[in-house]
Image 1: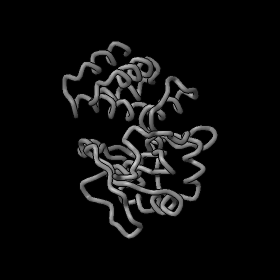
Image 2: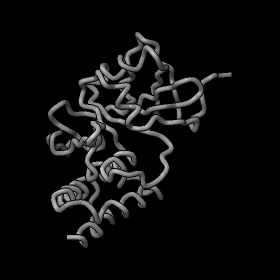
Image 3: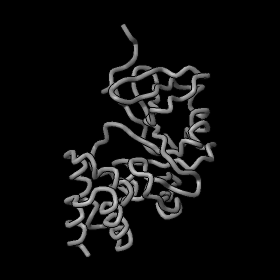
Amino acid sequence: MSDTPSLEAWAPWTPQEVTRRLALVRAPWCVVGGWALDLWRGAPTRPHHDIEIAVPRSSFASVRAALESDYALYAAGGGALRRLAPADPFPRDKHQCWVREGDVWRLDVMQEPGDAARWVFRRDERLAASRDLLARRTASGVPYLAPEAVLLFKAKGARDKDEADFTAAAPDLDTAARAWLIDALERTTPGHPWIARLMAYT
């Protein structure tokens, strides 16, 4: 029987804990997903089952090196997990790396296209922007993805938590962020119901 924890065995680090563990990493990583929206707001809005960060695939090695000596790393995808030995190359057909401590998962490291200067949408690489436009940082130094880009990722799922996150965040987006998200949705998912809802705030 495998000793790999179940897919649900999450006890995620906080964004601040992730930042401490990656303090020496110079790659342009950032917190994404629901946690990024809470960092933008400056306060928690709901419980989080896990925590995700994103880093360009070309810079993943530096994040891996910072974690690999103390934690077990797994390539994740399609409901399957494969333990990575230190010398194992990361599978090209996967983009998620789960970090295990003991019997629980602590962090999901997601690899994306782009580089230190340019953010590229992983689901449609035609959509790109200056990383400076979408990079944010809290007063305490935690890097996170801008809310308009977080919501773009959430638009695909239509899960209850994604709808709740959109409903809570959309009214507080500034004019530029709202325009960016409308344009991105029109280019990647024409007719998405969030487009009309965003336009109602303009």
